[in-house]
Length: 468
Image (tube, rainbow, N blue to C red):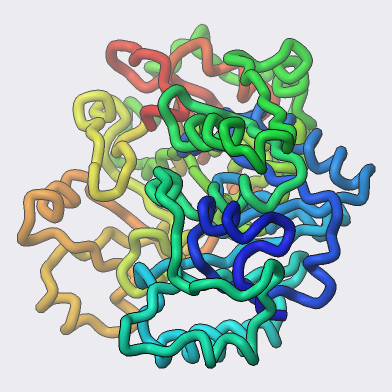
């Protein structure tokens, strides 16, 4: 069904909040009586730190399910991706407003017909897990265009027909349309985070000042700055699986007190290749984005995606998973370096174009001869001309190493690669060594039988998710 404006509020209020727009609704959508909108200021890049925010989100969804309410979101809203991934699993009736104003407005009959045609075609193939409401750009017909005759036979006007392009004076159009839609369409509003001076806070103020919307309740949540004691306890008591050739009783783990400077990784660095780990802001290699989103929302203590957490996952799975990220040709490889561990501190630098650090002081060293037996080879550094001349079998080992300063810096990494996953359970204990940033990190890896050493040099400041 096509409507002009939101059907639950007056024509004047609908125009004030979202402007003159068309809505294409799924069947029976406008009949929903209880509609809960979830709004929030933006989250940080590392959503694993947002445990309190996700706890509040789970509470909102539990409330909606108990009351058999409809949850509203919009594609660019902060909570959208998390709601869309979990609504089906939680049996939530979710509506998604799809409003992508690629053009500022619809000004011609041709643009109008195209939007109606495209939206109707998309509506025939609904997304799994939620219902989509298509929202048009603002209607601003040129003086030479006759929208009225076209719309009268196609569109329902819940409050009677009025001038199409009229829009009341208001500061509301200066704010994101997604948040305005959620404010205007709800019978109940939940704000999970509100930054001082942010869009969400100002919209909440305008909502309270609005003569028609002011009676709609807004529930705000004060965010805790530190995780609860129970969350910390659960984080420290993750399930520890015992399996594979490099795991056994923690009493036998080699630590800093065992003179790690005598380890072969320091005495004979040429015999080793090193794989440093880094923070993952998103799905693990091999994990779908939807699976990751569901984990983040539904798990009270989600997986630790810091560099240390990534290393723990590798050891627990006994597998370094190959990835095509940053690899020309999208080949799935595992990357290593032959740079000695005692040079990591001096070479560590932030690579702005990759949004990450090099030579992170967490990772795993594997004896070079064992990796060469699985097909490990040094990277081929070169330019575009060299790439064009490589065969398909050589291209997985290509790395740009000429031209820009960033490309030249790639050579510092002295990189090696292995195609496909590296399986740790095929290696002997003496062929694997874990390296960590400082002595306080060693405890986390005590359950694994491989040696654990500290990266030499001045111990860095706390090496958390933010700076890896």
